[in-house]
Image (cartoon, rainbow, N blue to C red; front, top):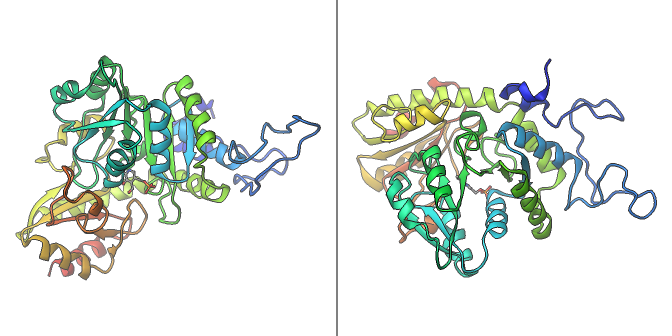
Length: 386
Ligand SMILES: Cc1ncc(COP(=O)(O)O)c(C=O)c1O
């Protein structure tokens, strides 16, 4: 085997940061369930660890692995995706600054900008990220400079695509950082830092964890200096994951590549099947040739992902009925686990953005296509649609 510098994604996922334990030879990274570490004399740290908010060996293994998977300099793990976002924004913004946010994004992210950071004195402008001129026009250099252009691609729940390389140029021209929420794609399908972004953000609750059994978040910085500033704030703000949650995400990451390939196979089959139905008004899936972001997806993603959204011809009533009748698809929030989930964004995950520019249509149903047998998934959707 070569050095980690030339290992491919699948190998890094299993080995980066995960050397066998030097004292016991344990192949699986131990869960270091400890808050503190004995010192040999004042300041005499044995392995560099002093207190688990600052660092913990299980979390270090996960953070090293995440940095390798995103091809970044520094990886950091958090207690949730929103904790990661909050720490990032409070590291790079100060009261009086400005951020550009997408007009289509996860509702919780928008709530953080609109309800929390706004009160802290950080203003935002929401724009359509596919319109690069509007993004450039929204960036400010004078009073309250723009520190961050926030990008989510594909978006939750409308599966919109943004061109990461083009946005990086616009953001950098304006002196801002480009941050990409890479939750929907996962680092296996898309690597924002390689495309020019400064930070990749994740809800590791989703594909990285992969089994709907943990809530977590991550940041990976392309640049070591920015990474160390983020690390300082990770400790100063303190929203870190515990050792067991870190271990669950690390275990999930090992199988990310094989799971994502199966998610993509199943999602492509589900999207093609739904596109043929008269009771479906539109299928939103970047793998379909009529998706407006199809070419961008083909350029910057390995495959189009495991998420499919549909708009039903029968409107909200039909959407609610489909959600309630599905059986293999479990009616639940979240996504990215091995099991298929179905939800009604307007009343569930995106209820917090009702009445804002980010409101989502009531006839929309979001599917997180799992890795079950595809025939069972299609049969379930058939009976759910009636
Ligand atoms: C795209 C995206 N980003 C961020 C988050 C927030 O992550 P968490 O729920 O882990 O705080 C979510 C949660 O659904 C999400 O879908």
